Length: 75
Image 1 (spheres, rainbow, N blue to C red):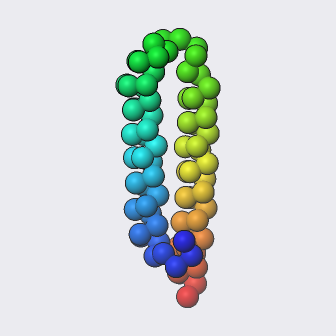
Image 2 (cartoon, rainbow, N blue to C red):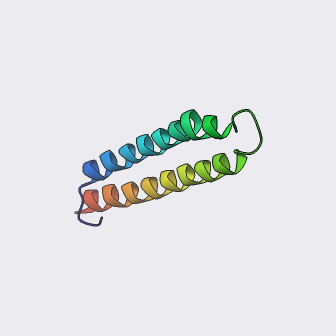
């Protein structure tokens, strides 16, 4: 990841958010409906874990993008 241009990293980072959202919609729309977990507290662990991944992905991407842009401006 160190040799990727900042713009390409940004595109990958944004694509990651779409992947996370797609996974959430799949779980809510298909898996939890099949298990009949929608509207119950049985799926709370999934949403806590999912939001944890979203926050980690955001922090990782923000930090990395900031480092890449700062490095590019200095050179």
